[in-house]
Length: 284
Image 1 (cartoon, rainbow, N blue to C red):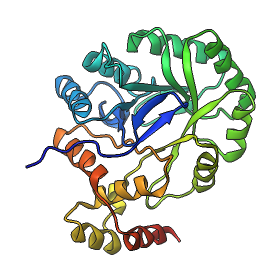
Image 2: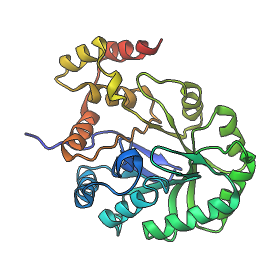
Image 3: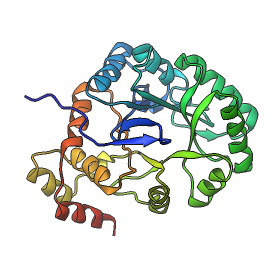
Image 4: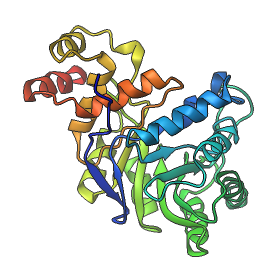
């Protein structure tokens, strides 16, 4: 059996860091409710190492995953980081408990969050730091302005935003050079279509979180296309995302090496134009 390799094409994040468009989201390498350490920390490390072995060179994490545990797991598995691997993290949310997420956009919180991420990831500068979610109690310009200051200090190389509207993206772009947007987007949730379209216009990386909703893939259209290509419904969903836009960067996550290899193999799946049209029409 041929070993899967990351066959997705590449993209220059910030016009400077070249990565394959299929990345890896590390969030699932935590406990239930994205809380606490993974059940098997050694296996979590092996999953991350295997991802890099298969050509995955974009790893996404956040200080709120665990919280903190996920960044530590990434560092334990991959530090010192291979020169070609981009480690991206996020700040701007706190975790009162399992399954609970609270946005915090105050400058003093972001300063502490960034300092913590630098320590846990064992780096002097975060190559891609993304603000996790706008705080309704803090003016967005104030939040982004604080991150811009930390970027000027050399603690952040490139800045991204997450969970934003087009209007919020434009506010951020008026303050910093935004190189990535991470919003929810998949076959069945296209609510961020306008944001994706704007990213495509600007050449900004669009990173869809929850790129695969496994519970919604039991669809006759998806199943038929999967059978046609001798693929799984999840692979079809990922292949559709890669075909959807040249700025699309899916980051499917898993705690299983077998599932990881299945996801990476999806990067080589070439959907026919009629397949792409049928899948695109699912949400129309």
